[in-house]
Length: 333
Image (tube, rainbow, N blue to C red; front, side):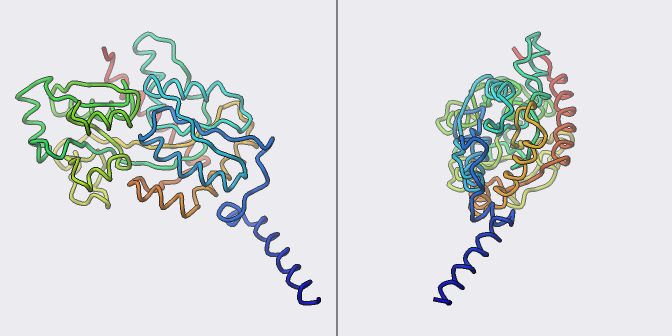
């Protein structure tokens, strides 16, 4: 009898310790159900298969274990991500609607102003919670294309202005801006074919509808490994450890051609500060989840976590930089 009582007491102490430990709570034991016990929707402003979707799904699955409620990923594509971004910007700040955004969210309102359109949302309507991934972009072409190097690609583009097409996730989107930076620096004219997101853009490249694509490494890594796609250059400042043979635009002579696609979680700006902190803490614990980290790494987009004031500063600095890029690009017809 005494042994059974001792075991029960030890078990209660173990469970109490787990509940009190943030790390253990995030990794092995769910927290009490999120306020109201309702699901927390994570909106991705693009179709499945793109960088935001690749980043969202492992973190959403880990957050379910942390919060004790469902965290479905809901794709709301359109207007290069502006429709989904605007949906979350207008959502109630009650902790039940989050956005997994791409870096393009910072440039789209300025693009609307450049085209004399009222912005569908303002960046200030979305409160930064945490960065999940931060992938330097790479230029990919079909594995059976004639271009074995960036030099081949540029030489062909100069011989045939406007003949080589590339896909993007929409005007001023995260896959459009880096190609504009590159083509301007190289003095070449490429044909831009916008789609609703990175997933459809990648499908267009794989099917031969277009000839090139700027992409984060995550969505294309399996196709690089299989040989269906070939990488020509990277917008990273230095060579990437998982692609050590891929040269950067900088080392190939394009000094200012640098761009990264980051994915981060945002809440409506109307969310009260204490609730924002609860969300940040939940995301931080989810980011420690080994399954989430493994899924991101396997996809070629390893965790690049940043939160709190550090992420807020990162967003503010990138916002200023991308607004300047948008103004340099100007109107896109």
